[in-house]
Length: 469
Image (cartoon, rainbow, N blue to C red):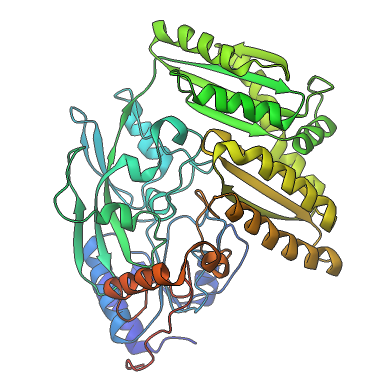
């Protein structure tokens, strides 16, 4: 539907003429995210202040309009797609760094500030914000928080939840709330900060965040290890995590992915290698060598074929070249890809990889696996041709079984990509009905008219149809 002039005028009065887009040609690009799903919104808001968002939420409640908040649309699950049309609120113009408290190692920013901008600002004082998703150059802090996006550094430094001190947000009822505090310790009240982070905009709209910063390490060394089997590689992961020198990152690549890399690059990887680990070790200049020595000892086992260490920029680039060659190789393999970021206990990874190999054969669907092995967070990539009816159907059945296996192993269906639309219908496989009921009541408490991102993240709640339209 298109919104009548009266409603549009209310938004213009609240946010300003230049902050309201109404033409379909202008709104079109705000209807998709990296899931490739699309619904064109009826109207787009580009606010610059918290107060404008409060007013906009009030208007949406008054006229029972669905409201979808988006950052830069880098998410892969459809969480930013306005599936019921209505209003999209983009935080892209809320891009101000509000305060940099260097002595206390934190920074307060608006939700639209890019991850990379925070890193650049903090780097001037030899600090950084640990969450580093692969889209860090162009994803926003608000989007990172909405999905609890983390990246490889989470193994040592934690996710957004561990690196956010406080939030300012607008609930679905249009109320302003302040969560958390400016200190790293605090237990007064309920932890609404961690509740809002990862909630994908179904409870409230985060407008400001105070982020906890960490010192940039003096030195980072890179290690690449090749193994004769995935089991040997995961045994090495378990051994590395069992000793005191914790790596900065610990990434895994499986046999199929290595084969693909060999086909699309001239890198001289060991011919018998069926799995690869990439590790990074950080810390003080005088301590890193000792930590690397301990990690090398833990990573070397009977299945280790080759292990190399680098501390210069050129050497690091050479070791990471194999990992960087994987993404373009995947794009050339098949026209369509389902990329799921499942998590299992680290010791269950060999079993999961065996099951994934069996499912690949059962459904004749290519499956390539890589990801953050130190957290048990594996990106499972199903590659297929959606135009082929048989493959398209097989991929959906295969995905269902992938999720069943993950849950059977005590895992979870998403580590950092979130739920959105893509996994919404699988949530009840992981969360029991009683617990889901509590979550739905929390949603209703924050958003009584169910206007915020309806139809996402949790099994559907009927929207209030009695409000005036």
